[in-house]
Each structure stands twice: as C-alpha cells, then as structure tokens.
Image (spheres, rainbow, N blue to C red):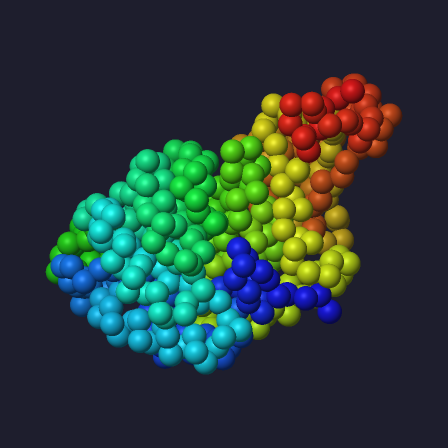
Amino acid sequence: MADLTTNFIGIKSPNPFWLASAPPTDKEYNVRRAFEAGWGGVVWKTLGSEGPPVVNVNGPRYGAVWGADRRLLGLNNIELITDRPLEVNLREIKSVKRDYKDRALIISLMVPCDEDSWRDILKRIEDTEADGVELNFGCPHGMAERGMGSAVGQVPEYIEMVTRWVKQYSRMPCIVKLTPNIADIRIPAAAAKRGGADAVSLINTINSITSVNLDSFSPEPMIDGKGTHGGYCGPAVKPIALNMVAEIARNAETHGLPISGIGGVTTWRDAAEFMALGAGNVQVCTAAMTYGFKIVEEMISGLSQYLDEKGMTSTADLVGKAVPNVTDWQFLNLEAVSKAKIDQDACIKCGRCYAACEDTSHQAISMSADRVFEVMDDECVACNLCVNVCPVENCITMVELPKGAVDARTGKTVTDYANWTTHPNNPGVKAAE
C-alpha cells in the first residue's frame, strides 16, 4: 500500500490529514480524541497574549448555508481565538505532545503587531515541545478590529515584518496562515517567503454574512437582536481555496514554497485535489465539525487506495502533479473541439438539459414529441452546461473530436491539437507549433 507518511517542512506525521486551528482543537480532550481517531496532526486553536481578555459570545456562534437536502455547504462563525487561559493551553499542549510524539502538533498564534508581544509569546511556548507555529494572519472578525488577524494579513509589509520576528526568536518551523480577503494571494505569500516563512497555509475564512432573519431584520447568528460579519468555511469555499493554492504554487516568486491546503476538505478526493495543485498536506475543520473525528478513516483509506491505483508509492508523488496544467486563459488551445453526447439508456427524460440550453445557452438540444433529447452538433459549442445540470451522473458526457474530423458547427477540420510544444515563456503551458 502507498505510504501516507508526510514530512512537511521537517514535521513528520503518519498521514497528511491535520485538523485546522478552530473549535475542534481548543482543548486537550478534543485533541486526544482526534489523535485516537487517526488524525496525523493538529493545529491547536489560536493562542493570544495575556493582555485584554478574550471574551466569546454566550449565544449562537455559527451561521449556515445548506443544500436542498440540508447538507451543510458552509459555516459562518463569529467565534474568537481561545478564551481559555494561556497557561492552561500550554500545559495541555505539552501533555498531549508527550503522549503522541509521532503526531504533528502546531501552535497557532495571534498577538498584537509589535516585536515585544511576539518575542514574549514565543518564549512562553518554547518548552511545550510543539513541532511548529502557525501565524494566524487570517481571521476576518473580532480580532481584526484589534489590529490582528486579517488586519495584518492584508498588509504585506506587516506579514514580512512579523515573520522575521518569529524566525528570529523561535527555533520552530514557521507556517504563515493567509487571509483570502485580499485581491491577489500571491502578494502576501511572497511577503511571507521574504520574511523567512518555512511554509504558508491557506485559506483562512472568508468575510461573510450568511443570512438575514426577515422577522427581526438582523444578520444571523443573532445575539440580542444584532448580528455581525464572520468567517465563512466549508465545502462552498473549496473552489476559491483551490485557485489560491494553485496561484501560489505556479507563481515564480513563490515557487517551491511549501503549502498546507485548507478550505472545504471533506473527502479524500478533496485532499487529493489540493495536493495535486501543490499542497504538501491539508487541514480540515468543517467536515470534522459536521461528521465527527472518525471521518478521517475514510480519508486515509480513500487516499491510500487512490495512490495505489495510480501506481504512486507516497503522497510526495501526488504533490504538484496538476500544477503544470494550470495556465492563463490566453494559452488555452482554441483548436480543441468537443461535443456533448446524451446516453439515451441513462436519460430519465427530465428535460433539464433542454431547458437550460434552450433558454440560457445555444439552443443545441432538440426535444421530440415523446421527450427524446438529442444534441445538435451544428449548434453545440461544448459549453458543458447540460452536463452540469443533468441529475444523472455520466448521462451526458463531452466527447473530443479526433484529428481530421469536421466540426459540424463551423465546417472547419479539427487540427492536431495533441501535438503541441511547450510555450517558451511559461513552462508547462502548451502553444501551437
């Protein structure tokens, strides 16, 4: 079987599945249960300095977005960093690490943006025997109003400055956790690298309001008639996270910077996608909060089986595998031609494909009197909207036209788009000879 053991910036763990810094990692009891369930590592919920106390709300902390079957698609949380005493957290971290030496244990940190505060907190955590630190430059609510969290993560100069302090005053590997609430994720990633970061992790939560109560006219979750923006996470943010991970992985200035992927990881497939786009491991939160810690068992078995089927012996074989195939739109092959095809045996005659194509696309699907739906090649532009709205998996597929075939829509012959060479300005991007 494939070896799932990972060595991420010198931090070893039995598998690439870590729990992200969040409510599930707030105390010793939870973390021990997580390790017993099989998680390879844990990022302890963010610790702060012993300045003004952190006080969380005593009421609803989560807003939610559900799918049609009430499957949880996203969570919005307004919880702050740990409100437990620093000394209690440090004592528990040391106790857990003593008993689980083979697991990764990272401490997430957030303190005011001054050198003394960072030097002090790093001294306090030194003897916990933790494997590394993660700098929380991402939280968009509560702490940002105090000049921390995303208030730091949105200023590259601050990221670089604080990272340098951490590398100066700590022996531990340093992971910088990036906020997605920014125009170009490559800029803060590059700042972290300049500051000496050993890795970056992303994405942290997205600033959001998930819903409004239309009786009280307050955002939810609601506390005494008022609501606030919070951090959005869960399956719904995965596409945003994948793109940002890929942007860092393929950017010349951050190329080679190790990445811990976060954002909607729910299954082994999600994890594999993050790793294929350059993540050395993944961090999970919402899935554990939805289904419990034992969800990691399916992740471990699924990823192991996938690697075996692909002939890969370790997770390192997967990391970055898809990066060369991520390109800019201008380099896409405009000579490639596909057409949609409907499997009549699988079709349930619901008509979704017809309605979507007829009303909002290219009128490329016909409907007979007895509700037989067929694709008209001379109108199909291969947009694949029909594939995405069809409720039956693989009922509609996209079929690539071979070299020499005539595109019924344009009347042009399909060229040999498989025989392309590497674009000189962008390795891994293909351009016509």
